[in-house]
Length: 489
Ligand SMILES: Cc1cc2nc3c(=O)[nH]c(=O)nc-3n(C[C@H](O)[C@H](O)[C@H](O)COP(=O)(O)OP(=O)(O)OC[C@H]3O[C@@H](n4cnc5c(N)ncnc54)[C@H](O)[C@@H]3O)c2cc1C
Ligand SMILES: *[C@@H]1O[C@H](CO)[C@@H](O)[C@H](O)[C@H]1NC(C)=O
Ligand SMILES: *[C@@H]1O[C@H](CO)[C@@H](O)[C@H](O)[C@H]1NC(C)=O
Ligand SMILES: *[C@@H]1O[C@H](CO)[C@@H](O)[C@H](O)[C@H]1NC(C)=O
Image (cartoon, rainbow, N blue to C red):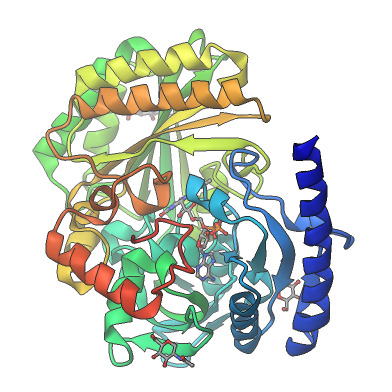
């Protein structure tokens, strides 16, 4: 009974806050902005996100700013009435910390979606609400590309603020390494330019720990020539090849080193057309133009006896993501379904640990509910990443030096508590299996972290760097208003 009264009071006060926000914030915003409240048409649609319902930030209003000044007004107003706010662009963030936003204001950045090639020919000016698929296509028309995430459904800025792994990072560095400047609205509503010349401490910090300091309304990004067309090879192996698969991968790296290494993206996951009782191994090898090393890679993997291997050539850069099956309509981009990840970065596969982990994945995915869960295996090339000195920005040095990113990504639908506990148990067991085999201290990529990690595991173990980050956080966001995504605390 008490609980029900509590709930009713909450609903009633939610309504009161919503109408107050419409009344008070509405007039402060530009003509292009809009405010949705729970009674507005389109409310449910505005809140759809990935990784839900496990991830369920709670909002009393969703505001779509059209200008930087709108963003300033939203933050000042949120501070004034004492509610949290959260910038949302691609809605793919999956850290559990996001659930700490309750009774908040969603700042939906999608109206700020312009991409403009600059007259200098080497930079583009990009809105804070631009998606990966938008920037790729806009720049391609100019024969250019930016360093972005892979999946078309994530934003441009979301991955960048945490580093940003990319299919072109081996050549151009992380997405964050390509930021020239940004316009940032701080926790107190002030708008500032952040670059090497203006607020250099913030410029250092937002490139790697960037979800902590402000809302990016627009940013200037270095762009590069699109270059040649791409080729994608795909190999599928049955699980009995797991040991030889990972030892071949290690051996190829031992023999050839990093320079010119093609991009390797794989996953362990169910494919009943190939094997009805176990997950299988899928490997995609991507390269641009001619690649002197790819024949060696292809023949080494071919020698293992794949169930199938295919080659698609002459792929335009803008079409690469559709060919790779990571486009807007791909399963990995789906929303409204739980996701949880258990990432680790390291520099060499431990074959026994991967077998132990595989067996756990196999057991979990035998359950129909978890059958679409996968173990992502990623190696994008480090040459461009290591060319940037670690001191340049807040991307963890571990992120630069540990070139393999492996993450069980568990998917399931629905709101069942026991299912969630099961996913967490199995995810943790897989991560423990990996960690028993690697020779480095645990490191989790900021943007794959789920909120349980200690700070050094995510932002790097160098105490001086962490102290610097904390100092900058204290200076710009002492009340931790940006405290819901890999917060520095
Ligand atoms: C399917 C999938 C594919 C992925 N692929 C890659 C990849 O290829 N490379 C990679 O590095 N990572 C990748 N990631 C991880 C990705 O970097 C994070 O999930 C990232 O948070 C997604 O950003 P978003 O805008 O799409 O999500 P959102 O949930 O909208 O944003 C995540 C967080 O970013 C902040 N934010 C959003 N917009 C702004 C803004 N304008 N200004 C300031 N802060 C803002 C907010 O704190 C928000 O909570 C992937 C994740 C998924 C689920
Ligand atoms: C992109 O921005 C324009 C102008 O603000 C807006 O009308 C449009 O709806 C935006 N696109 C999306 C998908 O939100
Ligand atoms: C399979 O791989 C082998 C060895 O690399 C290659 O010769 C063959 O053309 C490939 N087949 C397809 C269909 O790509
Ligand atoms: C907002 O915060 C910044 C950074 O701490 C500070 O420089 C600025 O003076 C503050 N603005 C106001 C209006 O308080």
